[in-house]
Amino acid sequence: MNDILQQNLINTFGLESLSDDERVEFLNELGGVALETTLVRFMADLNEQQVAALNYFIDTEPTQDVLMEHLLTQYQGFESQLETTISEIKSDAVAVLGDGKNENVDEENI
Image (cartoon, rainbow, N blue to C red; front, side, top):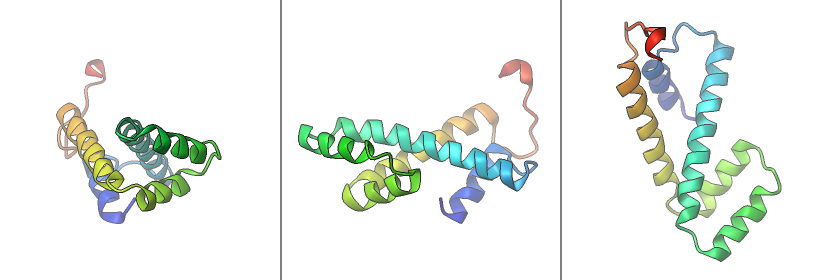
């Protein structure tokens, strides 16, 4: 995840108070959610042969970084769909949490 996107997500989710390790863990988890969501949506648009080839690759259990690189280089349109998913996640977060600046979350409303 690039630095600008990471900082934007840190601000959106109000992660400034977390330790570096906690931020990295949160951003990795968020990245995994974005990747999985995008992958499910993307595979729905592939033909059977493309799905079989991608499933074959996924069955090799690549790391998240290797899988992401493969998807970005081998499947046209994946990057655009990933950007849309990330934008949706951020919009949903802002709708629930506010803009992440100087707002306290009431635990009873979670």
